[in-house]
Image (cartoon, rainbow, N blue to C red):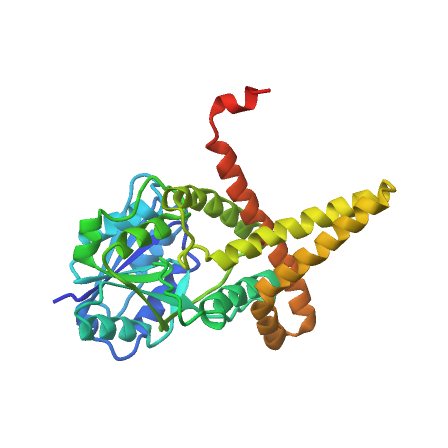
Length: 346
């Protein structure tokens, strides 16, 4: 009898899908007769399907590949995968992660030992094989948010599809992921909110995967559009939370915009010989710097300990740039929802 169905949406994943499948096979303390793997190929243009077909495992007997005729996005691919699933619990994995050896055991144990558990999410580690600055920064930033900066009084519950498990019956009753989101944007956040109306999404730090992060510009693009679409969800809910961003994180984001904006105005004022205005703007810049540094202090201390002072300084400016991207996405989202005739008013 199948207990856990692992659903993996894959698109052009020929370089990552086999390491993931191998990590599943290498999992410890699990009964592989109770596990099935469902790979949903989202019309890949590479050798993903062929590589999965050639992958052999003496442990995992039940491996199914579903080939979609058109590219439909990860939300739709996951929903289709669940239609073929037989397990009581569905585990979603991105095709570019690698499991820690005890991760599957932790998931199965958690659901088998707690009848009231309906949804669970894990975390990706802080390590990177790459020596590039930005992938290491991104891994440390995420780890710091989930582990180092975590407020024990807050309820962190993002159903992060990089690794997240849910009761299959609940997922079906909720109607699955919202497929209007074609790319991997905020479909996980939107589903999280629907789950959380009745059930807790439990964060288990022992449920861990490894993920190699992309470089700066692909992440910038994701941050912008994730902020754009989440801002629309925020206007409906009208509250911050640890799912997407806390009130503290929102304040830190705004302070980044204020810091950069005031610094530019201050510089331009001095260059225009408006020294009095420049002084006022400089004072404002200093105040914003203090507010922003307070917001990112735990992260900067964390990366200084992990990678040194130079890395921490670079992290400050890199983080500042990403906060500006997030703020830009939110502002563009706001402007895009303004009535069309507002731009024609005098």
